[in-house]
Length: 362
Image 1 (cartoon, one colour):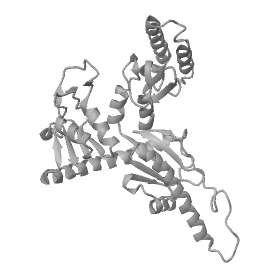
Image 2 (cartoon, helix red, strand yellow; image 1 turned 60 degrees about the horizontal axis):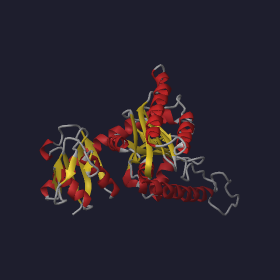
Image 3 (cartoon, one colour; image 1 turned 90 degrees about the vertical axis):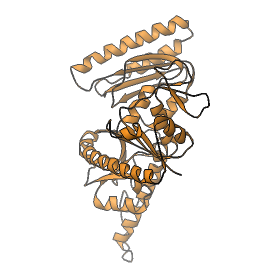
Image 4 (cartoon, one colour; image 1 turned 30 degrees about the horizontal axis):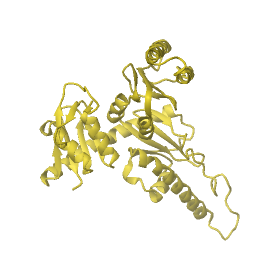
């Protein structure tokens, strides 16, 4: 699941929207209980729907719910499962992070737990460069899932030096001719990647032989997003094995990024171009001024917008639609949606800033 999937899910409206989430397991014997838990939650959801609707009114929804749950492949589940069904759509997602067990029936799909998990879980793109084909993966830690549906990926080089042969014209420099068509191909790869980067601007790990990485950097527009590279031919490397190779490199890079972010914050503090505390960071983020948000991983702040509309009042727990389950997540989402960056830190790192700080664009 990426941010575009999440935005799509959040866009659906109309009662009833049924959301089912639960933790799942990757290995036996723990995963033997997963089908039973899903069936129990489906039964719970069905009973709750029939308390408010006649069976005829929700017949289509119940059929879709049955069909989508019958499609679950329990041999390939990860750490969490999310199911969303209403009159218009039936979706399921295997997720590499655990979720609370919930059945929610509301005007919209329940996404709070997903937003929380996605915001606080290291996610990144892996681009495996090759002639046949170049593949894109969405990664969470060492878990890689190939991106295909609704995208141009995977992409195969069909030009000279790829699927088609090189010219035999002795007047043509075959090496230069081949290299130029590789540049054209990787420029197309970069353009296809850009469409997904615009929706979900994650860090990027690039995999491939030196020549291909060099061409991609030369013609690409995402060099600032590249956090690490893994050199070598990995055309036959499985997603599972590739994740084991890439994640340690990304993890090391993220640690360096945290140190760099702290240095940037020190500079911003000296230049009076920063905000601290959740109330201030939330307000400046909404104004579109957030360039880089620094936040402790365990920081949560249920809140209500104050009477003036410019600040936040803490609450014990949400009690109405105007309340925020977590103003920290709201701030994270706002910064990301407006093109800013977010870096997470261990609890206690940002104590002098009340656990959260924002470097301002202006």
